[in-house]
Length: 361
Image (cartoon, rainbow, N blue to C red; front, side, top):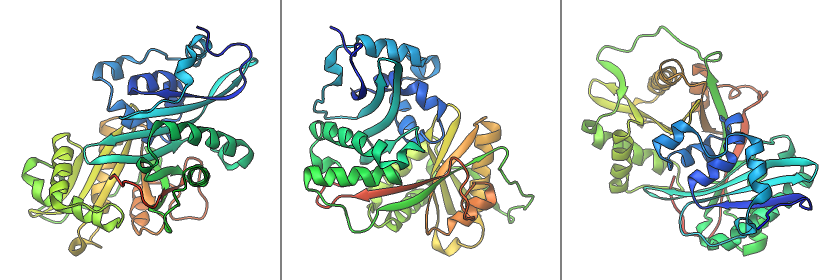
């Protein structure tokens, strides 16, 4: 049955019920924007086999994707309910131009529950234009409404213009209003070999930076709980924090600052793609703050990822009012302590909805 033929134009959505299918379509674009796409790429990579991740996907070029879309069954474009993780990709095209990936919506979960809805676009410049963005977001929200109950959409995170446009459409469509205050307002930043700032400062005697082991489970769990409680909107009971800590330690995704046996600081790296890693959690317990523990640990982890693991860049989000901006700036993360924001540094926000079933991230 023919899919998109010579008469198609403007925009259309494909719903992907598996990570492999989503990556097959979106990977050519995602790999060109691997740093900014980290949050919608890494979660999918976790869900495919190691063999698939190493060998590539069914489609490895834009022309392959175009050929498939031209002959696809129209059923792949129809909205359908989903009980698990899924991805929506919105494309634009016409008879005279190949399909272009405009937007990605990720709806996934993990050990401690549902993640927010994540939004991403490779077109940062276009995303500031309401004429370009509004009709695409309207189409995306209309499709999403058929996929999940509105209570599942407890918050949305991504580039600020995307999220604010989405929440206006979603509230108008479902009646669920936005929480009075953002859950999170942050800058997306990156560090690479050229921006990294090394120091010769030695650690105090008896202090070390190392990957956490299961012997550290209790102190790491306590710091995971303190980190979550600091966010206000996503607190953790200690039992859930132990589950998170055990998972992070078992997967080798968390490093610690050890001060003569006291675990003062944690640094987690949970989103990893081929060329980019993301630092996703940094926290120092209050009595060890202002002693540069976080700076030493973040610098060590960043250097390991860049120079030992060969990553092109390490990315992170840091809150607008978070004093950790100065820490990351000293390590070499760009665009945090000056007025000018270089290319690749984005303003991001998470907005929540009242009366929904809140997950955790």
